[in-house]
Length: 594
Image (tube, rainbow, N blue to C red; front, side, top):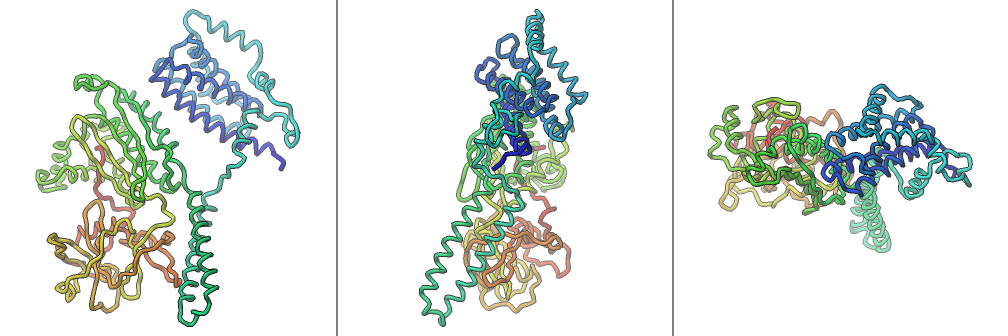
């Protein structure tokens, strides 16, 4: 297969992104360990590789910019400069500007913008120590050869498929070889494949129902062939789902720079530890936790960690620690954000909640209930509004994103020890384990991770037609909702109703239904735009008989229970409060105050 220049440029773009990310992380590490020779060597090697690759592709402005940055890194490498915090900050800004040159160079621009020219002057000044030795060395080096010429001399002679590409950089060629067995797939294509596997499963289920009829008992061979196709279909589905899985490590590593820059702006010291970076998660889930993770890391620095002086007085290391950890746990992924700061101020949170009349009296609330208040929209204990926090906006995003993922958030905190916030999210959004229930002729699916148990509705409650009530479940009060009234279904009640007990971070509740169909795997399909605001519904799924089942939104239903179920009163039909808005209603959860 012929390799074109466009192929090389695409590979260069990917390689550049990876190398710049690596250089950024190395610079943050250098800030903590200024004399680490391995980190210095990695930085210099990354800059040299990028400079040479850009020159070989004819991106001369980019190459010249990298040449100046390389001079500073060489001075660090040879100990002529020391990696002070100010110098590291300058180099991080230089990396940010280098990123901007990549799309410009690919689009044909080959001149440095004014801000890049200004950065080159700052880099030149930084690479010139007071005694002038580096300046003389730099001048001699620049006079010997240009960056483009230096890189071209290193290029391998063209041959074979590359004969028409004399400007191919060796590093890019090596990267192309290393990625030869890697395929990048557009998300839209992958989603279509997932939908097709789901439709295959539905078709197989319909065939299975037909083959189980008494009149087809003699077709044993046909049933065996069908079971074999089922095995293959499940294996295909498993492999397709693996294509959607990506490691969480790159997302974690993005926050190394965030922690450093934020700590400097707050006059604090902080470092990051990461564990479980190889844990894989669905790409759609990863995108939905990107903003929550950013807000939680920012709050850990701004609110969690104390100043260096306060930490010394408390007998702590003046540099605070933020730990990011991911792990698999009972079919979900747990992501922890931990800081070793002062912990949450329970008294301040309670006082603020009472001031805003969110609770009648905070004294009767447990710590976990107090911490849940922090995620209410606009809630903040900060007395001064800054660029980082104080408006109470960020943490509401965390809760809304977690609800959209059918996830949960939990907070634990100890005064003087620190705070841990745990996010629990599903491995994937494309396929879920569900528990099917029936009301009249309709089928609904409850996400299986939310189902605790099933029990019979007590006889005393069957005679009522209320949409909500309370039953005695082994000595404790359990509020419940009737799905028949909630969705205004015009079907006659059955003689014997069942209760599906569901659990959410807000507590437990029951759903009164007519039939229990059992658990199974379903392919989640989003609701059409016009139906996305229907209360209590998260998505839809196709059943084996071709009908559509609605997937219940447990978070929305739990909010509905709290709004109407506890007092046993059901809202009148047509009452706007009878519907729970899924995507726009925020619920309290736990995190550090914004």
